[in-house]
Length: 197
Image: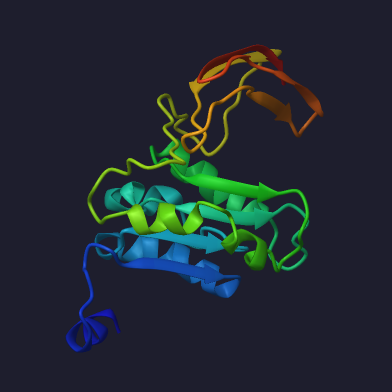
């Protein structure tokens, strides 16, 4: 289909994007897994990684910029599909953006597509080029497993934050497993120590 369209229309092969909703969201993930060499970016919604294993994904798929959207209370496609897919790709070295709404159910796309910077972010992506526009995510020490396991009673976290050209005044964290929350120290460069697990 893409080859046929490229023969009929003037399509920039370095700016081919895929997005989909629900089953189309699953197709977006499948396109990333099967045809990463064709894609500049992907925006799946209300779906998840549908391939047998993230570890089976071709290495090139880890470099496709992805911004995934899902709602915690999705009654049609469990949010665990996104959670596991994003965690697996991140553990393999990908830097996947993930917006996980607390509510909104399955039909979150009207809200998601109105995310103020989504279209600008998407249109700035080029096949084979490192993203330079915000929002950016860089995981410098990924785990090698889909989940991080430890017997420690707490974690120490650190990172940098940007806000689309605006000043960062506060970084906060919330552990959804135990409802612990607090404010990190710093703003653009931040640390959060003794985060209870």
